[in-house]
Image (tube, rainbow, N blue to C red; front, side, top):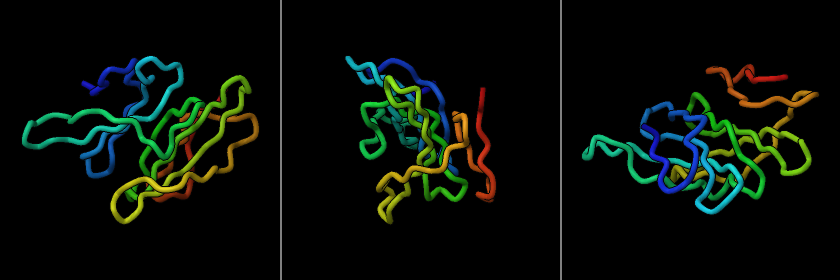
Amino acid sequence: PVPTGAGRGGRDPALSPDGQTLYFVQTRPGGTDADIWTSRWDPAAKGWGGAAPLPVVNTLGDERGPRPTADGRGLVFYREARGTGRTSWHLSAFDPDGELSSVVELETPAGGGTHPNPAADGSVMYYASG
């Protein structure tokens, strides 16, 4: 099961390439916006540790569809800006300590698209449309 903590949701789960970090989307307790959360595998407990929101990527908009890059050095996700209907894609890279750093907006296809998912070799971005 997805470790949802006290929030609502547990959608869009994705594992890091090493299988040790779980990314997922849920609504913060008392909040209305969707955010990306993470949990680390605890081998001693043989289960997922406590869930925590990712501070670098979450905003007042709705962050969804987290997908780690195949090399484990970045996280791709999309954001829905509240009240605008605008969807944008983003990439956040991991620093040498394994923490997410600044967020860069990626080119989003005309007409939008959700759930961007980079191919293993990084040459193509698959996504949902319509």
